[in-house]
Every structure is written in C-alpha cells, then in structure tokens.
Image 1 (tube, one colour):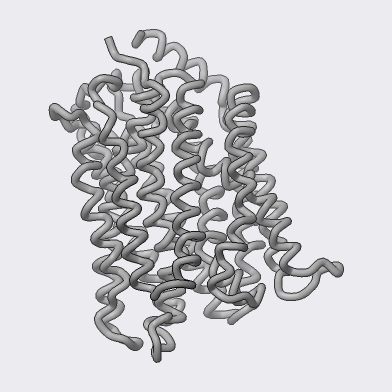
Image 2: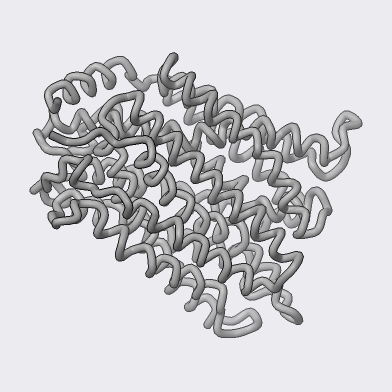
Amino acid sequence: MLKSLPFWGKIAYGGGAAGWTLLERVILTWLFYFYITSPIEGVEALLGPMAFGLIMFGGRVVDAIADPLVARFSDNFSSRLGRRMPFMLVGGIIYAAAFLALFYPPVAEQSAWNSVHLVFFLGLFYFMFTAYVCPYLALLPELARTKSDRVDLSTSKAVFTMLGAGVAMLGSSILLGYTDFHTMIWIMALIALIFLYIPALIKEKDYAEAQPADMGLLDAVKTTFQNRPFRIYLVGSMALWFGFNIISLNLPLYVTELLGRPEEDMAVMFAAWGTAVVAFFLINLLAKKWGLKFVMLIAMIVFVVSLPLLYFMVEPFWNIPPTVLWFFSMGLAGFSIAGVLIVPDAIVATISDMEEKITGQRREAMYYGVQGFFLKLTIGISTIVTGGLVEFFGRPLGVQLTGPAAALIILLGAIFFLRYPEQEVMQASEEIQSSLE
C-alpha cells in the first residue's frame, strides 16, 4: 500500500520549483535586457530586439517539441528510482550549465556568432528545462491523490516558485549593486542547483504508483486530445500564461524605460508582487471551497483590469504618480500571479485522472507535456509580440502597449474557459481515485 506524502514531503517537492523558476526567471528578466542593452562595458548591444525575439521563439519551439517527447519517455520509463526522479537528477546539472553559457556570448558586439551561440544554448537550456520540469510536474498527481492534497501540493510548489522568482528578480538586482553582472549569474546558478535537488529526498516509489505505460508517442498525444475538458482548459491556460510572461519579460524595461528608475530599483519595484504571498493562502482556501475554475476565472479578470494600467506609467495619470500607479497595478496583479502558479497544475492533475477511463493507463506526464508544448509556443509568441512592439513602436510606446495587448488575449481566453465542465471532471476524478484506494 502506498504511503501518504507527509508535510515535509510537500515542502521538499515544492523546493524543486524554486530551482527551475529561479533560472527561468533570470533568463526572462535579464537575457532580453542583456542582449539588446548590454551591461558589458563599452558594448551598446549584442543583438537587435526583433532578432532576439525570433531566436527566443525558436528556443521555445525546441522546448515545446521536447515536452511530449520527454513526457512519453517518462510515462513509459521504469527504474528502481521510479518514472520521474531519474530525469530530474540528470537534467538539473545540465540545465544549470546551459543557463551559465547563455551569458557568455563569443563576440562583444552585434554579430552573427552571437546569434548562433544564442540559438544553440537557448535550445539546450529549454530542452533540459523540459527534461526536469515535465517529470517534476507529473509527480504532483501521483504524490497527491485527493483534491485537497493536490491543492496543498500546488500551493507548496507555488510558494517556492515565488521564492525562486523573488531570488531571481530581487536577489539579482540587489547583487548588481555590489558585484558585476557575471558574478550575479554564477551566484544565481549555484542557489538554483541546491533547490533543484531537494525533491530527491522523496523516495518516489514509496508514495507514487510507478507502473510504466506502454503507449507510443503519437497515440499518446492523440488520446490526450480526446479529453474534451483538457482542450477547453488548455485555451484558458495559454491566455493566462501569455499575460504573465509579457509582464515578466518586460519587468526591467517597465522599471528603466517607463518609470525612469535605475536597474538597482528592480528589487523595490518587484516588491509590488508581494501581494501574491498573501494570495497563495487565499487561493488555497477559495479553490477548496469554490473550485479551481472559479479561482482561475477571477485570476484572469484581475489581469484584464490591472495590465492595461501599464500604458499610463510614463507620466501622471489622473494626477496619480507613475510609481503609485505601478504599485497599485502590480499589487492587484499579485492575485493573478498566485493563481497562475497554483491553479493550472492542480487542474491538469485532476483532468489527467480521466485518462484511466479513456485508456486504463496512468499517463500524467503526457498531459503536462502536451500542456507544456502549447504553453511554450504561447510564451514564444508573447516574446515575439514584445520584440515586435518595441521594434516597430520604439521605446517607450512599444513597452507601454505590452500591457493592453496581454489583457486583450487574456479576456478572450477567459470567455472560452467559461465552458470548462468542472463538475464532470471532479466526478470522474473521484471515481478513479476511489478505485485506486
């Protein structure tokens, strides 16, 4: 009989999210800035904004393609350590190494070699990101088998995700006040490595039913799309992540270009997202009481209200100073950010239970893999949208327009997500979990 994951196990599982989030957030926060507004002394830029956006999209395509591939191998894998943990153990160290390489371009000026370097190591970075994160996410529905435990585990993951994001954004900007850019990058990588290997404290086979599936890649992907609630959820999730990635990617430009503050003030301005910490516990309670669909819709609506305010950050709006408007807008968005970090993974964990009814197999990784495929493409598109807005409208107008553009996409996604049949999903999940006990 499988053991129930204890409290320390939920904490240990969440720790891994801090590691991969830290590296990803540093990439999203500083890589764009590093290449188009080089912090290297005497270098104006390493790449143009549009070129960077296209290469970033290419990296996300590699990442997206890797998701179903890694998911299939993880679902069908068998070892004495389980189906998921071996991928995480191998992937973590290579992931961190690729991260470091991205910030060492071969030429200290705009050059085609920098493009080649970025294409290769961005592809490797995102492939190894998937090799770690897809099996990591697939552990969630296996370690936690009830709605309450899954919300708890998603909350633990979300808290550590926010911790990783905080270290990436606050820590990196604080370090830049005391050391050079590359030293900051090395410190971030070492901290991330520690967190990446905390989940290894959990003995997977003690808590998860590690029976390998036997379905081929194409059949596995096709069958996943036969799950109608998953298709509906996927559209809403893609819209939500589109908005979140846009504000994450542009955070340094919001602070420096719109608010006119130095890089070191990133830490102070990022503090506006501190409301997400309080929202974690509120969302945990609301999700258990009112359901995951309700919370996700509220998160989307709050984004739709708060993100357009970014357009008015250049000068006082209705006599409200831009800095005050920033803290109001981003403080409000903190609820949505907490929702992004908790709700989608808990929904997929529940939807993946329906696979037992469709095929009689447990293929949690493929659901996260297919979701990852489309989310990575969405994030890549959001990067192109950002690069295109900055390229064609210039600064600061192009940066200002990112907020309204993101809000429009999220609004359309929320309208579609209203069709999500939560009661049908929960009923099927409860039936499946009862049969496993």
